[in-house]
Length: 210
Image (cartoon, rainbow, N blue to C red):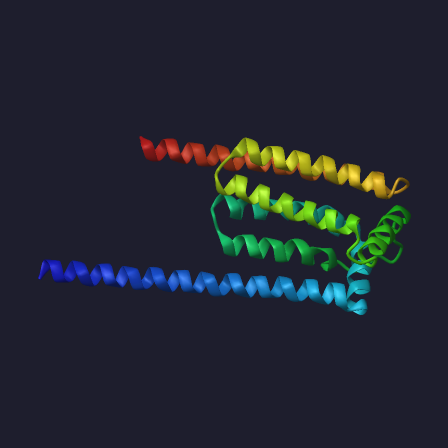
């Protein structure tokens, strides 16, 4: 009787686990499809492309968007694919969360005009390298935190921030400096946040060990 009851409990636990995995898989696919649809619309629909960039002139999106790395980092640390996909959706869509400003900053206008020209120029070598760099940043940061490697994660964050500043100044010498304060603050916040996550993880590990 006891063995039979234990087998039933084990079977029930397996069914619950399978259900959770299935639900997470559905959620992952849903977020991935949403992200793909937004990217396709962004690059193929001129009306959506221009609407998104008009709203991106709001400097609130400039400050918020880099900070979307924080939930991405947290999701990678706790190995949540759903959190990673949702963070990527939020990261991309945050460029048009805020209304277009009535009087845009001239430097913002100049910098975004450069970005629009680059994105509309097709798959040039510059754009392919840019896309590869963004993907590499996400992959290496996600992999480092998934493996709970704090120093590697910090290295990726700092290197990404430095390269972002260099890229901005190189491709927009007159307006690229407007990115520097945002990149420095975002990089600093991310470094502090990763340190906090690692501290909490180490503290919890020691507590469980004792």
